[in-house]
Amino acid sequence: MIHSLNSSDSKTAQKLFSKLYVSYYARLVRFASLYVGAMAVAEINAISIIK
Image 1 (tube, rainbow, N blue to C red):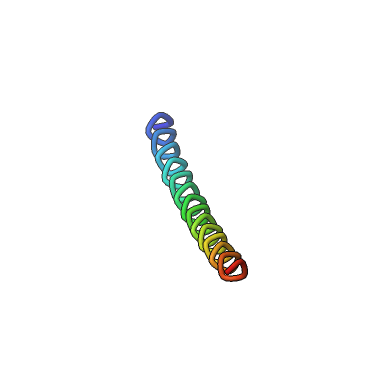
Image 2: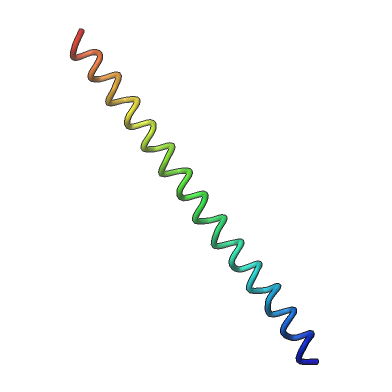
């Protein structure tokens, strides 16, 4: 009884952890893409200012 409860608990914890990890990773990817986009815009602006 206790053993089955523990295994289900670890599965639940694993699910929760993977969900947290996925949301964190998605946020990281979004931030990275925003950062890259901002850098590209800044570079384009700098090139146009130089020209």
